Amino acid sequence: MAKLKALLQKRENRICADCGAPDPKWASANIGVFICVKCSGVHRSLGTHISKVMSVTLDKWTDDDINFMIEVGGNSQANAIYEAFLPKGYSKPHPDSAQEERQNFIKSKYELQEFLQPSLRIVSNYPSDVGKQAASTPHSGSSKSEIGMVEFIGILNVKVIGGTKLAVRDMYSSDPYVVLTLGQQKAQTSVIKRNLNPVWNEELKLSVPRQYGPLKLQVLDHDMVSKDDVMGEAEIDLQPMINAAAAYGDPEHLGDMQIGRWLKSADNALTTDSAVMITGGKVKQEVSLKLQRTESGEVTLSMQWIALNM
Image (cartoon, rainbow, N blue to C red; front, side):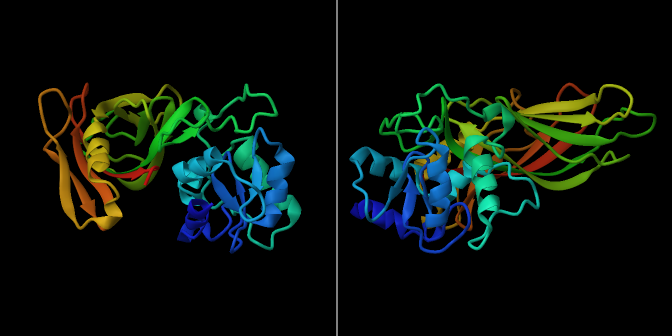
């Protein structure tokens, strides 16, 4: 219990994961979040197969329950998954929100999983009396957050900066946009009209599963009347960044430094070597790519890696 209370004292856990109320004294032991008394009532109404509600001070916790809370890491890490695709401008409940607003949000977040990428939503096959949510596999001693059969190890923030000398797909120009694909997840930028040197400066977010492959990038030309034309593609090897980050540990405890490098070769799309850096307590990597299977074009990205086991 001392470990649980120490986790509760972390700054991000001093407010409710769902409404931001201060000093939460309840938790969902199979989701891994600390919640206030008002939100705990809504969680309890979802059933223990969705959320197993326990009091931090009154209930007797098992070692497995405590270890799972520690493995998840608290509210920030859990919300990075459950709110990863919260719509821009969406207003979460606040401590004084009406009960109906609170109920709608919590049900959407955990039961309907509306803020997860659709391809990652889980259909539970667990019986209702199982003490762990379908969004969490049984404890295995792993220090990684899990949702159903998909085990997430981190969040990848990708800032699509811009493109240069992109290919013409309309009469004289193109209407480009970028699509990022990681497994079954997709995220895309806005369309920029009639521009072969577009500047997006848009941030896209993807959850990274334990079993991950390359991040695939496509540039397409938006067409109103026919299928969008491909303007080029490239693949980004995530291993140099993720492996380097794992080797060095919590970046918040380290000064600015280079910790890894993805080398340009004939087998990849890099225009130059790409360094993995710790900058301001964050793991970052700048990537410049020459688009493949097209006549011309380059795209520049800035990536940030956030491990969920820190």
